[in-house]
Image 1 (cartoon, rainbow, N blue to C red):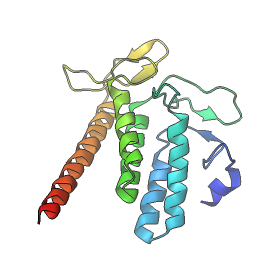
Image 2 (image 1 turned 180 degrees about the vertical axis):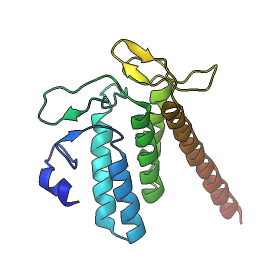
Image 3 (image 1 turned 45 degrees about the vertical axis):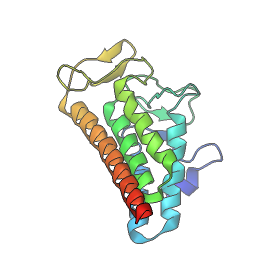
Image 4 (image 1 turned 90 degrees about the horizontal axis):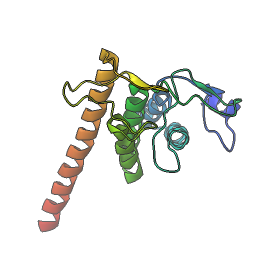
Length: 185
């Protein structure tokens, strides 16, 4: 948290001067540690940095544009748009799901779904990365289009993201059923 305090500004709530790869794991780890240790400051710091990261990677039109694999420096006026990676989308899905589980704030559930849709075409190219015939996932978005190689890392990112969304919906249905049952009783 001290690294965040040393570089945070009113416009940027991040731990370093730039972003690189699998970025959402930092706020996710902070939220989980804060939750397990009973430290609300850690949880709040993780939530604040995740919210900043979600805003950075979502355009005004709602399209997800992940930080590209080549990274982004705060000092740069523009950031790399392409070489967006499935692991970044999956990290966002799982971090937002963690935020939802901890806070029960529906905005995090919605953001988890929003970033999952990157795999299905809510991205800078408007193209799905999930291959409906194989179930695999393309390796990313490049300036020339989808990188159709289907590596294990990308397919596992899609699968973990899909399972995370499925689990969120399952819990929502169970909670709804329990509430309905309690209301009748």
